[in-house]
Image 1 (cartoon, rainbow, N blue to C red):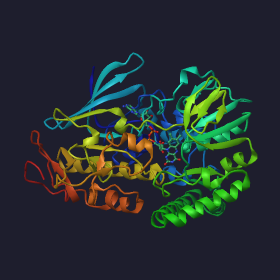
Image 2: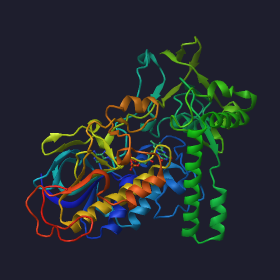
Image 3: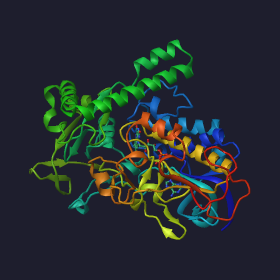
Length: 507
Ligand SMILES: Cc1cc2nc3c(=O)[nH]c(=O)nc-3n(C[C@H](O)[C@H](O)[C@H](O)COP(=O)(O)OP(=O)(O)OC[C@H]3O[C@@H](n4cnc5c(N)ncnc54)[C@H](O)[C@@H]3O)c2cc1C
């Protein structure tokens, strides 16, 4: 155990953590910081997931960082390309040397008297206990458990003679060439992996309990390509990024406002792409409205093409039980399989599974309310990243990082030692943080922080609104209080104006 202290610690060296580190370097140049990463490499999601065909389902002009142009030809990019982009960004901004790999953060305890977080960490392969402290904590640890995906109870699984695979733990020795493959699931992973496997497997069956909306788009962005041919790289990227933000937001609004029209459009496109070979209404017409759950993307219609070609097929039914050679379905049908891929979703986990406490009191994330989608009620000097679910994750992650930089600079300038959001109305109604109806979010609803119903306590899927609240709204607006409960500091100043301030317990 040692007691190294930093101004800021960032948990997680994925897309969000590296982005936050780059922002800290440029916006808070005087602050000491380190990035604590549980794994032995950076990239998070884009290093962990290695199944065939793994790719983004957002276009990269918005999933990449606003401060580092996406210059690759593909707008929908493969996992390895995204990983290289994150790695190159970390190197370019010299934040790679600030990462401490093999540092898993177990708990974080805030002390108001000391105005610091104390982190309990397991370091290295021997899980050596280590303590680090910091004045401000940024948790960018993603939103799901790295231990493995969610797996429902499969009756009779012990009888299955084939191989059952978790796509989160895909390894190179999984030989699917010439094999009968069963992919169980209807989410983004299933939609991605089915066409990729179908290229070399004997046949792939996608087995779903219920349909999902699948939307087709080109893997290259024609407007961005034209802009890039005519304009300097950075300018072309900026324009392409804003066009994609606007188009994505407009499409989301259209779907929420006119769900019947949106449903009709999505189905018409699927029907058109599938022809008479596949019953679109049976397999691609969910019971819910578009964006009640995340839409799945098929770049260049690869899933539709695989189904149309007969290399893959789709079945909407429920597994009764596994057999020695495959699965028996509720309808009485059977599917033979050498390999079964359980694309049954992620195990959601807030805040990297870190146990939080404030002045000795445990703070279960599920009992807190988010403030501006970036802080937690009653938790000082902590910002966490939870990106958009209906737009690219990075758009929100970057706004949250910039907000953290504003807070860190303000704390430093004002001399106040802590800032925490507090709800003035304890009876405020609460809603789930993500109001998706998908089973992954329903299962995790208790564990995830809640959102309120209005003002800074409501978490909306609106980039424009978040720009205003996180980048430009006064920091002290709507419930964020700067205070100094510990020993007096000589240089305390008004957090808004920076003018010298007379001490008070809290504001
Ligand atoms: C296959 C897949 C495809 C996706 N595609 C898209 C997409 O196209 N568009 C989109 O918007 N979103 C997408 N997402 C969501 C995606 O996770 C985010 O876009 C983004 O990569 C999240 O980055 P992150 O850094 O916040 O989290 P992660 O990538 O999950 O990284 C978190 C990091 O924190 C580390 N960590 C976690 N807990 C601890 C701890 N206690 N101590 C230390 N370190 C810890 C992890 O090891 C990891 O390196 C996808 C998700 C998956 C699984």
